Structure formats: structure tokens, C-alpha cells
Image 1 (cartoon, rainbow, N blue to C red):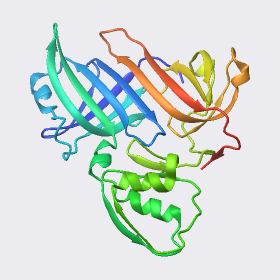
Image 2: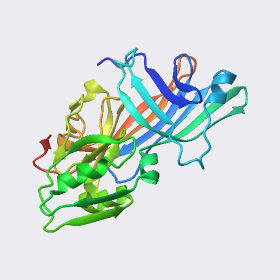
Image 3: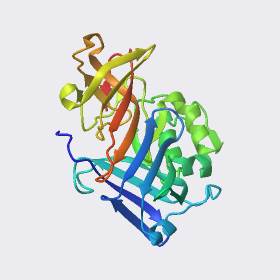
Image 4: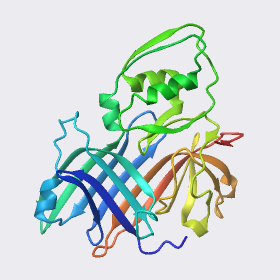
Length: 284
């Protein structure tokens, strides 16, 4: 892929319905996604929207029982069909204010934040129910969340069991650190289990910047904005400067940061975190 002419479509559930915001409006964003059992985050700033549009994009951070969705598609295409989805979640807070000569609309969002706060379960499971079946049932209790991929969870309960309480906590108890939500899809993957992404090889030709850095069990690298990367996916890393780290990995964290604009210059960089040491990776 030639990494020229960045583009975006930011879809916001605003007062009166959904809005699509795109070029020529300047967008600055910071998105953090990972396999940790906590909500991913997205922060967005759009410059100089019309007054009526700014008025429609508002949410008080204390209205935690109100769901307002947000989606960002970005990359190097020109339509919703060609731009990858790099963030999907719900708005925690949105407001506009003047800063110098510009009006800034700021949005703070969480991927599955609404589900973390508002989900609750009361279910009974019969003897012999597998952990995988229980996980799939609990995910149904998460508002606005669908099933992504569930890996190998073959254990079965040896007696009937009633489960009641916050759904996220119940899922954490069963799947441990293997449970996460990304782009409003729930995943439970064992340490060596991966999903298949839309890009599988990372090289200098795909925009790899500098050398990968190892910190204990983690390996990180930066790359020119790469919206095709997904959390939990398999990749093959090929570095010309640190060949020691070349090999197969599971992506456990992604951070997208930058500016997309016709009027203002700015970089867009993706930083990826890999699990260093996983063996026998299996693509589901």
C-alpha cells in the first residue's frame, strides 16, 4: 500500500441523528487499543465546525446511562468501504470551545465504556456447560457488544452454577487475562491464539520506522500510520536493523496518534506492542 493522501470519516451519534465529518476539517486523534481487560480509549479534536454542528455534538460526562456512539475510519482510501475502522465506541464527553482563532470540538470516548458501566448478569448454567458456552452467554449481556473470536476454553463446570453481578467482572473471572473488547467486539484468546488481520507482514516497505525495542516480555515498534493493524492479530516482523527480533508475533497493543488535514501539516504514527516469547502461534 502506498501511504499517500491520508483521509478519514468520523461518524458521531449527535443530537438529531448521526453525523459524518470528513475532510477538509482538521482532525487530531489519539487512540489506544490493547488486550488488557479495560476499555480502550479515543480522543478526538476537530477544528472549526459550523455552529449548529458544534451544538449537536455535546455530551455531559456524568450521563453514563446515555449511549452515544462514535466511529473513526481512517487511512488512505476515499470511502467508508475502503477506509479501515480504527475506533468504535461510545462518547464519554463532548464539547466545543474557542482556542485563539479556532473553535475546537473535543471528544473523549471509550470502546465498550458503556458496557463496563451498565452491564449486569443474572444467569444459571447446568452441570457440564463449557467455559466457552458460558463466555458466549455472558457476552450477550453486554450492551452494544458482539462476539469477536472465542478460543479454546474446553473446561466444563462439574455442577450447576448461578452467576450474578457485573458482567465484565464475571467474564474476567472465567477468561482471566484472555478477555478483551476491541471495536465493540468481545474476544477471549489464549496466549498463543491470534486472529487474522488485513496486514500480516511488517517491513520497511510497509513503513517500519527505526528499530524495534524490547522491554522484558514486550517488543514495540513504530510504523507510518497503519490503520489495518488489529489487536490480537498475527504478524510477521522483518526488520533490517534488528534482525534478532525478526519472527512471528501476536499484537497486544496499538496506539494511533496524529493529524489528518489539508490545511495543517502533521504526522500520523502507529505504535504497536507485541508479546515477545509466545510460541506455537495459532490463527483462529
